[in-house]
Length: 191
Image (cartoon, rainbow, N blue to C red; front, top):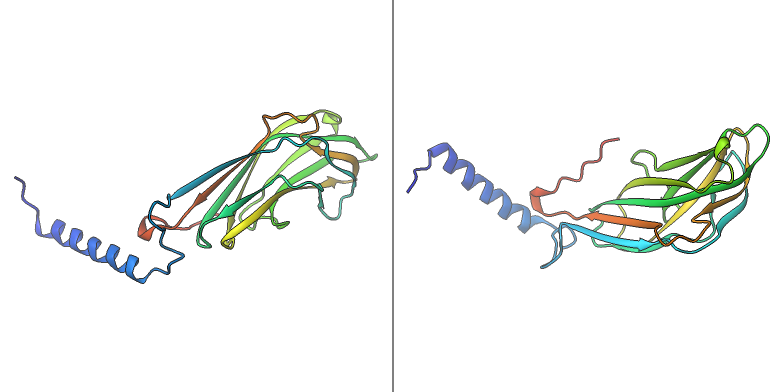
């Protein structure tokens, strides 16, 4: 048998009280239901062919018309991480262009936690470029959300921006939702 020092016992009692308080005061949305994981993972194949935007410029991002996929959020207090792994392509650039940015968005909105972009350079024109783009989202409402890709030129525009132009079934979107769970979850996002 072992002996607990008085300060160790105090810490254990305080921790137990704090855990009990956090569960009792948490909203039903903040506390996971029985069997709800702390991290919910979903993988969506992005296998549609010829997802393209015919013309894009440099002022605003333009949405590539076909969405990458939909996913569900379990809690509005979650941190949601999306990662697109696949290929992007631009068929041609206008004179003076430096390339194009592709941006991963949720519900047609860019993340406010950093930048979720990959680029295609002019020297990579007409090539299927393998990329990995990660986006972190907070404050997404409970329910279904849609992931999409947007494109914008750099210094000048271009034609025919694609996601998965060749229709490879290796292109996919990984969604990880970090759900709140008492004090063991701290939804901190460093910008």
